[in-house]
Image (cartoon, rainbow, N blue to C red; front, side, top):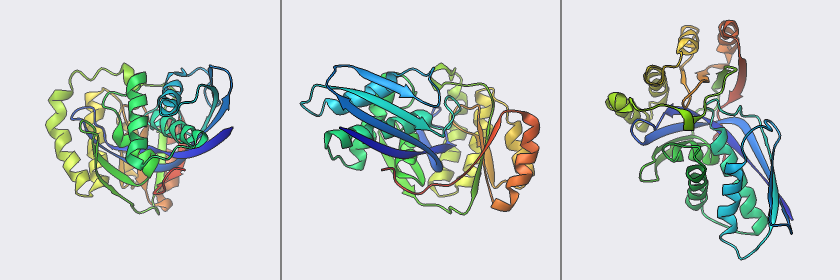
Length: 282
């Protein structure tokens, strides 16, 4: 028996590291997971876009779903993704969602949205790929749209569809930056500022919130803010560090894509074009 599920990536509006409260926006990059059950008591994980990645998260997602059944079996889990790994673009949350959804399907289990997100967040915590539980990232990836969450209480405070006519541009440097390795010991110094921009996002002012969040976290995490500044100078509506970086995301009108891409080309790395995603994973 086998099943396939597809979810989307996301970008940060508010990084939750400093306060435990965050916000993220769904984007059109996709992650697809196929789960194939077998009679062996072994889980094989194939990550096609990066074979060097650890399989711990995938194993944990499958294990948590399997615990809800009485079945004893193994599985082959095959992951294909457009989302760069270790770049702040929610690749772990997307993978967790896709694997949980595909595992639920293959076992014939039906859960509500919150229960699905609870499994994804728990798997991320258990495997050590998140600091706060990443409910904001998981919810934006699974549900689409703009989500605002309290990760400490595992609560979605709001979820709205936003203008999907905007373009998303991503500057992805060559180096990776895994959340689990980030030094965030100085985050209390920035928590009041993050709280202020979090409230902006909660009020729907996500464009300004995203830009200010990027400035705060670039300083806090000692990441370059050059790509964001260049994008803003070339008519981006918002631009800032996504997650713990190193990627920078920009939201712009389609007619401004080329000018932003042109100035980013001097920075090296990759430039990816996407759209806003308001649709739920399946």
